[in-house]
Image (cartoon, rainbow, N blue to C red):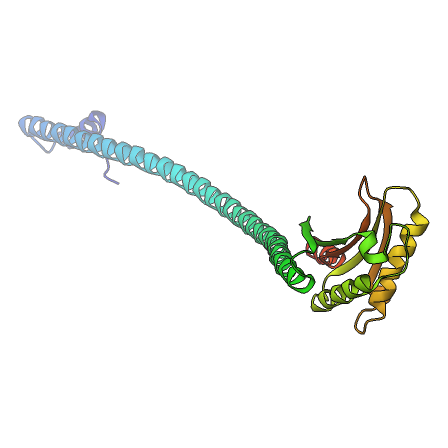
Length: 255
């Protein structure tokens, strides 16, 4: 570091050599030393200003660096949170899509089953009319094929319980329809308007026995039901879809 001389120091030096120098030379020397002092002080001031400026810039840069680090930390935190949220949202969307796909599959099974039943019902209806003849009473009720006949035609009278020849022929034709549609359940329904269900049951049992006697028709396939006909009487053969099987399939799909 440059050594700075004060005026007192300069005078001291002049005093020590006053005997060896002329007064004019001493004055000149003092003047020169004063100029050097002024120059040195100016240089020191410039250095101090430069150092202060450098320190200010350093402090500013350090502050900006700290702020940048804080900003980077915040940004990284936000990116991490965004990544977590994005991943969670992606998982949520994927789960929703999987659930939707499963629901669509379930609805497709239901829709396809009903469409298939409707198509099958129309086919059986056509088949039944061809087998039983154009005068046969055949219809569709709730997806079921319903084939009806009167008590006098089947038993000779309302109170009869033994099949007539015409009744036996009708039962034989019914058996053909049943065997061509093994997936359908078969219900034999006796309609009664008098309340005498014992007779009605005997009548539908006679129809059932006639069907069972035909090869390929098992007793386990037939359901017998005597019920109030609500101002109608006779015998109905109801060919229904396999609702139990459909329920089992749906139960498995909707677990």
